[in-house]
Length: 96
Image 1 (cartoon, rainbow, N blue to C red):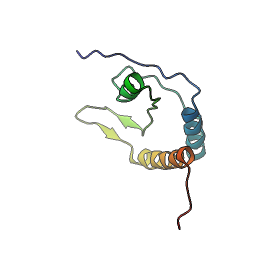
Image 2: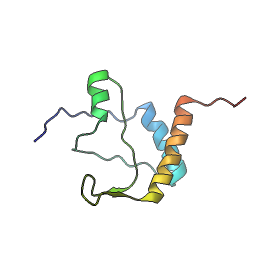
Image 3: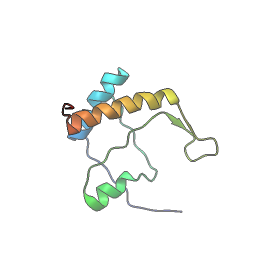
């Protein structure tokens, strides 16, 4: 099978803090940390470009299976979290 180097993003980064804040604001509960033993594209950024990367997403089942699916309500909530994260992380300017 496929073998690749893994990575561990040390907890407590500013990005993780901002994501946790907006997640709790939208979801009404704290963000949970979850470990993954699968290949995640974020490892490429961390290992080869030294760019910290977080993985965050909707509720899903049977990923890569013939019956892979996501919960649509969670997609809407995650979209709101990501929009707020981007606004907080990057900043916003008023439209003219």
